[in-house]
Length: 385
Image (cartoon, rainbow, N blue to C red; front, side, top):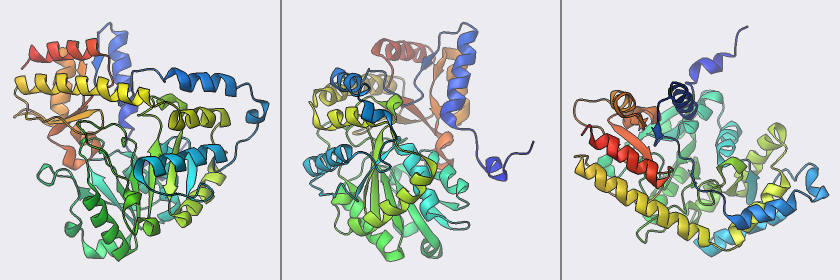
């Protein structure tokens, strides 16, 4: 049996590899502390669950859902965008439900990237941007995210010949994995560049509500001209602790949305309407859980950053996401450092090069682990450093 050639271009997914490694260690009786995958450990808020409990008994929801998402859900997303970003969206054709934003990334790429087309991919980055491009037969072109540029791409460094051939650009702010944040001026520069070269921009804004110290993440769509060239992907996974529910959305330019919809209607049948009903409650109901989430992650962030500084790591407190992006100690590569932590401390972190070549020299810590386990990880690491 011979698999499709495209699979030979795609490395194994890092989160799946890490889960497998953890399972192997635990089978051996090792007490592993994982600071790897970004999956909130806190349960979904009660008010969301309560709505879901009622919704699953609704017979109308047991049939196929609307391909684009229920109009109630799309209106809730539009209302959220107007309330939060002062961005007005038409729920009929500028909002679409996704089965998590991950599938939106892949399907958007299929909608715009043909064989031999270029996609502009940040590096380091969420691996799906690159793998989706490869699946579509496209060519990933790296936009380095460097510490000296606050982990923002420098559009002036992109080869103009490549820019003319590029069909799609991915951005992600607040950023995974670097935890960097962007201001509106940066998004203005991105829109100007994309309009110059007729490139579709997709901003992956999964962490827009995971922010600290008074920082509020802007929307790409709040920039003048973005409505002509851009969409934004959002997820309820991180802010509302709904990773397992698989519900997100795409918003923005109606022609881009129409193209995305043509792919989606051919590869999936939409998300369970009862889950969309619960998502409406998340977006429109009480937001106390968001304040609680930020408070918990702020405390964890401060605890970990303080400990890392005591151990000699050059880190600062991020203003977005629930990750810490830190340089490895001298004498280590990203992989050798991560392997050493597992072997000597049974602490799992993700090597920076798992997110691209420019991630080399760094490692990522996720704070989606209970406080007592973070304290245990710190204790073990301090025994080494």
